Amino acid sequence: MADKITDHADAEDRALMPPPQATHSSSSIRVHSSSSRMSAASSASGQFSETTKLETRRLAGNGCWSCETTRVDICHVIAKEDSQTEVWEQAGLFKFQYKTAANAIPLCGACHAEFDCAIDPGYVFFPDDLQYFIDYETKDRQRRQRCAAETGQPVERKAPTATEYLAYQMNANLVPSDAVGGLYRRVFLKRFLHGGTVVGLEHLFSTPRQWHGAPMASIRRAFAILGSPRSYIIDPSTRHALEKLRELYFGDESPSPFDVPLRELYRSDAIKSANKRHPEERDEGASERAKRARGLEVGQSMGLIEDAGSTNRCAAHPDWVLGPHVTTNEVVRLYGPLFSPT
Image 1 (cartoon, rainbow, N blue to C red):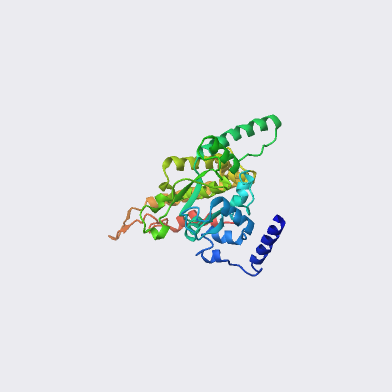
Image 2 (cartoon, rainbow, N blue to C red):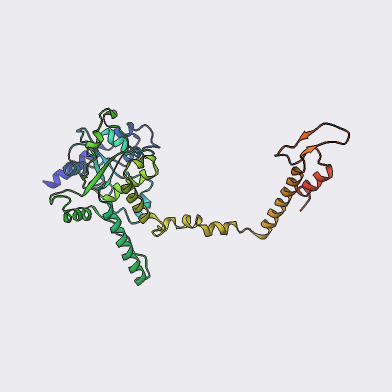
């Protein structure tokens, strides 16, 4: 029976597949600009299978996970074309399957659009207990350093999974024993629900809620708001916790192999080294500076110029290099070397 259900779902999936020449789906049509919204990439990633959609609804409910509106889509948290995916994979933070329920959440059209607005997100969600993730990474870093010292080989990072986060919250009596996932904070950065006409509506839906998916997926989306002025809507302690977690994952103590060359390029030692020119280049630079200095001396000596037989006065201009009193010989002295054969 299960095989028949699977075969039927696969057949439906094939029927839902767009022809090769199609470039837009119903969800991407709602997107105003593909360059500013991740939803375009999400649409291009391919729809979830019907089985995954059913499982997501079973775990997260039939309504919008954010605002409980009944008309929803099953949306990607991380799109396949997310340009940061490789960065997080290289850092050992993304270890979940992108086309499973671990990367899926039911959202209404309004919440989906604001969630996917990469340039200016109006909605995000992330784990309610960020300190757990900070402590987890701190301990794992110590483990990696210890093992690397013993073996002489780099050690792969361990990142908290949905199961681990749920188990931690169950042990802390923060969620019941039948919870589908740990608690996640819903954060509205814009008043877009019902066009912002209902005062206090965001407060009603800002309470933490259980989510079944991969916590790292939500954290990646939360990091995206730290460059926005809207991030200051969040309370300072939560914002600082996000910044600290980002530093732990991607800071100088946790370089990923793929970005080491670029990191070294912008360190102070590299900049100082780049400033050390070849001796001939330094000599040429000194010569040019001397020429500019001589020109500056001429300009500074201008002041008010008065010919012996004239009462006409010419006020010096601060940007002049050659003033009215400069002779032909001085011009040749200043610029002749530029035209001399080397």
